Amino acid sequence: MIVLQLLTALAGTATLHVAVHRDAGTVYDVAADGADGQCVVLGTSWVACPASGPVTFRWGPRGDWAMEGQTVVGPGETGEAFVLAPDGSLAERRAQLQGEVTPELVRELFVRTGDRPIPPVTPGLFEDLVALAGHPDWKVRREVVRALVPYARHTASDPFPSDAPSLIPDGLIETLGRDDDRRVRRRVLALLVREMGPEDPRGEEAGELLRAGLEDPNPGVRRLSVVMMAKSAQEGGEIEPVEAWNAALARVPTPGAPGRAACNALAKLHDSVDMADVDADGTLALILQHHPERAWHYWAAWKRELPFDAARAERLLRDTVGLSQGLLREWAEEAPEQLAATVRRWEPAEPHSERFRVVAQWLDPKATDPGLRAALALDDRMSDPPGAPVPE
Image 1 (cartoon, rainbow, N blue to C red):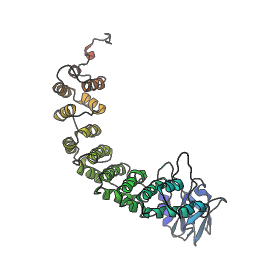
Image 2: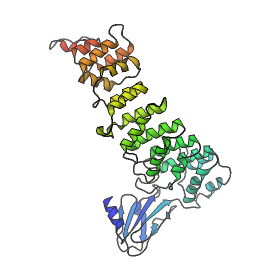
Image 3: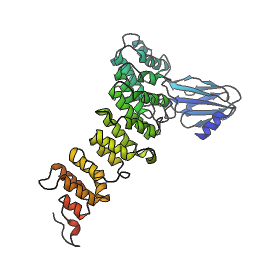
Image 4: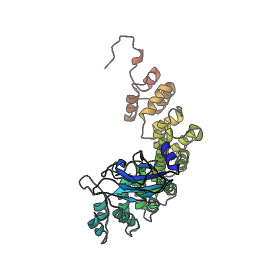
């Protein structure tokens, strides 16, 4: 979009950033009156026109659609507009909101399902939805969050192109994310923030919500905040990888689901953080101290950076119920002798446990070291002479 930035910076260019509903048409259907020459379409939501005076943008095709917003744009300015169903076309639906508003009514009017399509929203009807963010019933406010999800970037049901302006007004996500009811706050993170792409114009609001959520009194909100911070960092969003790492690391000692979620987040951040900026080995020690089951997942993600450690591996084999095939196979290839000694200390003799048999089965294709195969009670096929039959 470098060309777009150059054009919008020119004093003789009037630019429109327009969200065209997918059912209406495309940005090529936008007409401009008063331009000094040929307008240029950039991306799927931008129109730039040479201009020495105001340019009036309008929806070109005839039909059941209208352009709303800043449609008259002067030279050197950028207007923002939306192509939606015209006000008045859904008067009956708007009238329903004048009576008692229930969660069921919000779903009926705004939430599309496979067996219940809804008509394209009008500006007035969307304003009504936004106003419901202040409804006294938390169940209604929670449904407002659900109704807003399609308007977040990158959702399958988003009615606008990915580079379109956001129909969600400034401050609304933060208002709902700081709702008095924990169930509304959780839904904002679990549905709305989760679906927002890194280029979403409301990304800064979402980032502030995630930071605030780390100190939320509700453990569910705290857990979701840590998870969503890692997701944002992975996708190049508002949260920097090291910030997400430190937030998750600080919460590893937390008992229960929030602490386990923090461990999982640290594993997911493997490809996002710089090894020089974090203490991967110290983090593994912390996870082993507080959530040893999660150490399998974390160590598997960092297996290339964290070499085999006999004491830690024996503790995982002896004191946890989880396993990681990828991590075990890494050990079998990189440290077969040390792994063999660890296996013998873990289960030195028959009868072996089902857990032992699973480990042996997983390692069979990768265990080339005779000592490791012996420790796992596997056939010593590696010592067979060429051409010898393989025992069944």
